[in-house]
Image 1: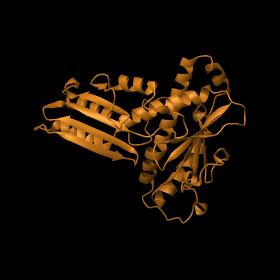
Image 2: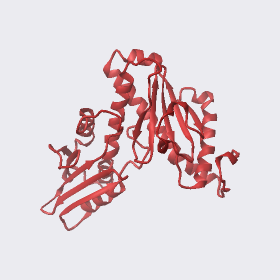
Image 3: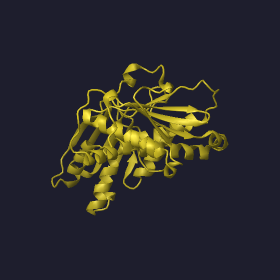
Image 4: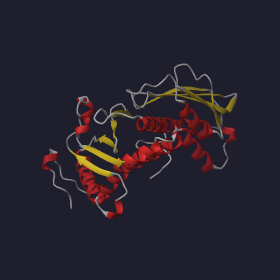
Length: 307
């Protein structure tokens, strides 16, 4: 159930990969002082000097993963530890960060292996800084979510925003944790393919081979857990996909140990990341290869499952 990084969006920033590759391959060192904007709310700043081309300063500013969470200014300590661990071989955290940013890293390209594949891998890892930050925040929030003792019936879904227009929700009851993804697609053909994929995923979930996997539920209307949520967050053309994980006995045991709580939160967050990655990317590509011509549908209600 475990993978290492959040994969529901393109992990490495294409813009960062491009500019860092240019700096690394440039035969003539130049001064760089550039801002990069992505996803409407993420901001990077890259700074390098021709006098010391091996040193690059990378700064990032991003909103909190959950606007409803009471987060202190700056990044949580657990996130800073994750960043230090990930980039310890060739980067260090600059304190204080560049004005207007959450974090600044001092990258030393001289500490990266000169082998081409190693440098390509390192640049991709550096360009995945946003994924590292958001993954760490998600693990911390799930740990906090699982450690709260609340009366049954008082739970509300926690809205998580990895993209300004694509929030998803985590809903916890004493016996389970449910993750709900509102699905939105640009193309009508994607809606048809995704709907068929979700239906087949539900069927596969009932098989013995998937007995230990979180249960998948697809619905064209919002599930009951999302009652009261803002309409703009529930407007979809691909319905809602939910994954549940039973945890009543596990949570009682995990509440006795903070270390085990963090391990459980990590497993849940990684499970979420793997499942959503398969739905958004691999699943649709497989269906596109399977059907070359897609009939047009005016409504999901008129849809017939593809055989």
